[in-house]
Amino acid sequence: MSDTDSHEAETPSLRTPIVAVLGHVDHGKTSLLDKIRGSTVIEGEAGAITQHIGATAVPLDIVSKVAGKLVNPDDFDLPGLLFIDTPGHHSFTTLRSRGGALADIAILVVDVNDGFQPQTEEAINILAQSQTPFVVAANKIDTTPGWNPNPDSPIQGTYDAQSERARSMLDQNLYELIGELSDAGFSADLYWRVQNFQNNVGVVPVSAETGEGVPDLLTVLMGLAQRYMREDMEIDVTGPGAGTVLEVKEEKGFGTTLDVVLYDGTVGADETVVVGGKNEPIVTDVRALLKPRPLAEIRTEDRFEKVDSIGAAAGVKIAAPDLGDAMAGAPVRVVRDREIDDVIEEVEAELAEVEVSTAEEG
Ligand code: GDP
Image (tube, rainbow, N blue to C red):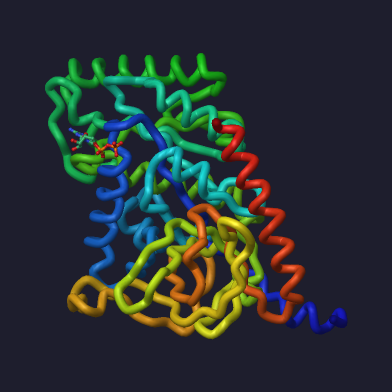
């Protein structure tokens, strides 16, 4: 390829950072994801919410509406946030991209009354090992005795409106949590006191039940991504797609399908892809690219909508022949104008790494 060609072929653009949610069982991971989805769907009634497979996209304008005066959209050029819908560290460790974690940022959910629990420790070790930046959602602040909820309010407003007793009980829980983070080797503080999120972990008090603090959480994630991850988000939007299999699923009318998170480039509805398989990479032609139909249009037979192509970052379902041996966590690559053997080799190399890392976890 000549120099001019390669310049024409490369159209760098910014993709959406991918966010994962981790934490101890029952500390509120699922509720928090539901809350984020719920509040952003309400704000996005005009149709700004894009439906994804296995993930929820929250565009910048919705982040800014939910966050109110906490976020000025002019300060950002990243397009928003993409939350992986499956919480937990099993999903986090399975989902990798080019040797790293698929998620660019994580939310570590900790029940503010319960503090650190075994799976909190596990999650924090995994985050440290993969060097994934994270924020701590100190969840269930509404269960503080005497708490008067102010639904969906930023934390400062609702905190100031509480009784002195409730405030001091919450303070005490938060300081204990900050102490536990410090014992685990992370210098942490309440997020509004953190100057440099590269050196310090921000703690955001939230309630997945009432939505209090959720505006702050979205603000901190967006700010962290914009400030420290912008360069990593520069991708060649038109390049051959790269993604990771979330799930292998049978779908009526489509046979075996792959739910994929695409983190680079594009995939087209008629392209050849290489997918990691149980024994060897699978080479197959995409038969259909599917997105969920908007809720209002769902008919029982027709849950999916076919699209011609899709660009990163996004969650998409791929229907193709011969996917029986595909595995969750496996890489997916669009071949396009490359040598098929090179792409197979790339997939094999990455698969070897996934297997090694799974073995290490025991
Ligand atoms: P997960 O196992 O981490 O996904 O936890 P869930 O989201 O399933 O939550 C566990 C329980 O805690 C459920 O009964 C939730 O309704 C409850 N819960 C989660 N977040 C909150 C919160 O902020 N406040 C209150 N009061 N309950 C919560």
